Length: 114
Length: 110
Image 1 (cartoon, rainbow over the protein chains, first blue to last red):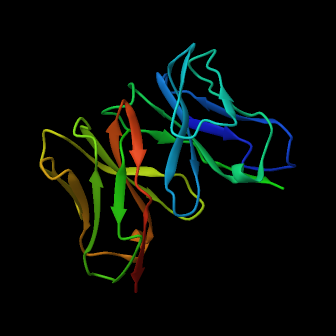
Image 2: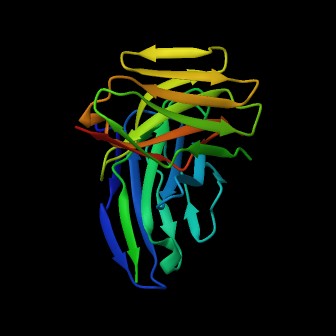
């Protein structure tokens, strides 16, 4: 098993550009989520999905879109990049819906918006 | 939603000493409390977790305690080693999502 795979590892964007961060898992997990990690602020939930076709907003959803067309994939789209979106992004998956299950993280994407 | 506070933000200990990191949470409905370790440039990885029906759990040098009445839980690392140096995050389940504390950077001085 590869676990949770994120691409790319690094990305530099100009303000206003759009891009998609890819996330795939091969563990047949129902639950997937996206977090951003900023210094001193821990991991904050952006969006999450409890299964194919179902997504919902987390704590900091503005400026991001998600979709879940398959169990395996959960891409995160930045619609119009802003410097405030400079961060490290982690995708995570777990067996069950949120509670009571270990979250497996991808290796992260370091995004810089200039 | 759930609010998780974590202290201290940085912690330095001598090798062989113990380290304690404390977290509080706000949602009394939370019932799952994992701890993650993140080494520099790496992904967070689960090191131990505890569920609300248990007061304490141990795994070798690592232990977690939970006080549901006071809504706080703690991570205890005994006989610290240089490889324990990392950032540690606590988390609490709330509204069917995991909410994380802001992290503790632990440095173990050889």
